Length: 263
Image 1 (cartoon, helix red, strand yellow):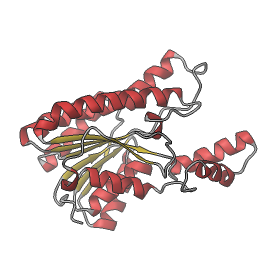
Image 2 (tube, rainbow, N blue to C red):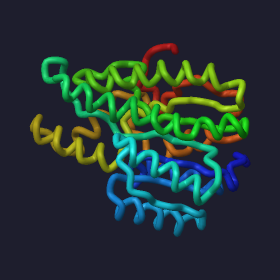
Image 3 (tube, rainbow, N blue to C red):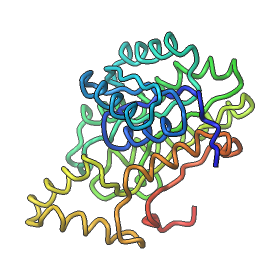
């Protein structure tokens, strides 16, 4: 299937590893020019080099902390200066730390707000005017299953992902007439570098091995396994494509059946 992404220009946030990297790699495989960012310039450049070597696509790595307004503006400006247009925006910022309501104070709440919600809105504000002018654009937010089924001990993620979903649905309705789609991808447990590290930390805290923690998470999904990052990247590439031009305002879970609800 030709996704129609050849020579499109994509911005992918927080893409030196994990889900962001997988999304950048898949878009590059489909022929898009990719600009990716990471807070660490060396890691961003290394990720860009690896993706270029695998795909031969033009890939640029840029240092950017998405919670920093000036850095986000510079990230977008560099892409616009070098490529002229931005067709696809993939917002991504990892997730806020786990914790219960009692463990959460106003400072943690504000940091989660800036990381998960404001960063996505900020990047969208920067790219949207030009998309509207050209009557074409794709905005895809990497969210979480917690947007649809709250996770125990994840009050910050549950709160901010729900807010992101409400904002994205509202925006989708506002810009659909301009040929722009806005969608969220909600991954379930996915075996990224971060998840691997988390399994080790959670395992030590509960007296289990890393593999036991991974197996425990896998057992919660009907497929009895974790997702691989490339499976998330493939969904993002599809939503960015011409083939998905009539899909907007959707939060699409990629979770092996973990979410039990109908909608």
